[in-house]
Amino acid sequence: MANQYDKYEPVKGSFVNGKFTSGENIGDLGGVAVAYTALQMYLKDHGNPGLISGLTQDQRFFMSWATVWRTKSTEQYMVNQVKTDPHSPGYFRAFAPLVNQDSFYKAFDIKPGDKLYRAPEERIKIW
Image (cartoon, rainbow, N blue to C red; front, top):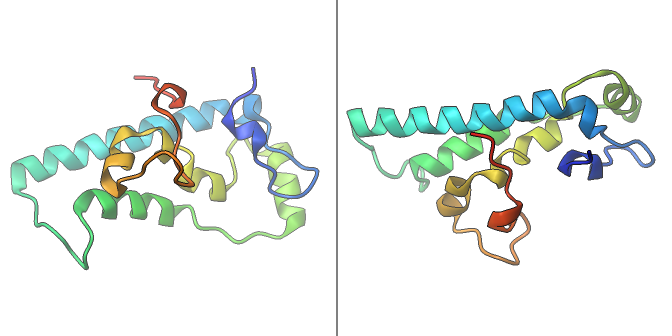
């Protein structure tokens, strides 16, 4: 069963194995969904401070998620990682779970034709 991660080629000729990484990919998808829900609960209970540095709390949340996965690796490391590590490379973890979250589209007003747009029927939903 192929998935969205199979298309990622961190180094020419070396691809992420979606079957191998699927457990961790599901973890990332669930993790971002639960964390976003927790943020919404917190803001409901404590109030939303509004814009900070021109960004909404939702925008700041998604940007923080992506920032956590910033990485810099050699090609040799990436080739080894996709063969031996059940985690997808950080580059992909930064945005792949987000493009499956409806709240991500709302936060940044992402529309069809935008680079990170994925049609609603193509978004992965687990819970």
